[in-house]
View (cartoon, rainbow, N blue to C red):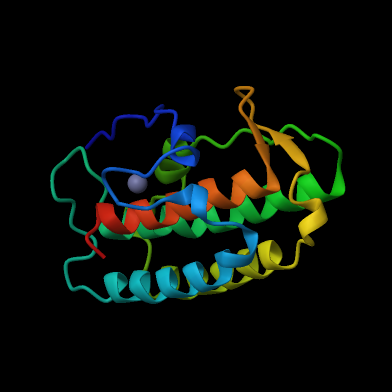
Length: 172
Ligand SMILES: [Zn+2]
């Protein structure tokens, strides 16, 4: 079973509402992250309790379990990126190949209960980290390996969309 690598550029979600999931990421900011993440974690936990959570809807689409494991790692990676932006001036983020991570860590074979616990812990950590950034540091910058530039503010917006869009992917 092969998943097409997701090379799409999602930075447009910062400028307009996403037609697929309906999220208007540009309206969010670091202070709104905790409530959104708390709600999302509850919905992901419900998804992970589905009896068919490990079943792919078709061979080229991740199962809800694989999406949940990905979102857990999104929580962890964005926590790291945020800390880097606060600790260093205009850091370049280490590359993260999402599709390679899914294969290397065998997302589809992980225990849904464990993924749920890890997702809740990682979600609480990253939510707290965003909420703790004082407003006068929201414009600190960081760069993705491909040159895309983020501030703490737009990183929060991009992050929120990613987490909620994947809930839409699994109808969670
Ligand atoms: Zn979306």
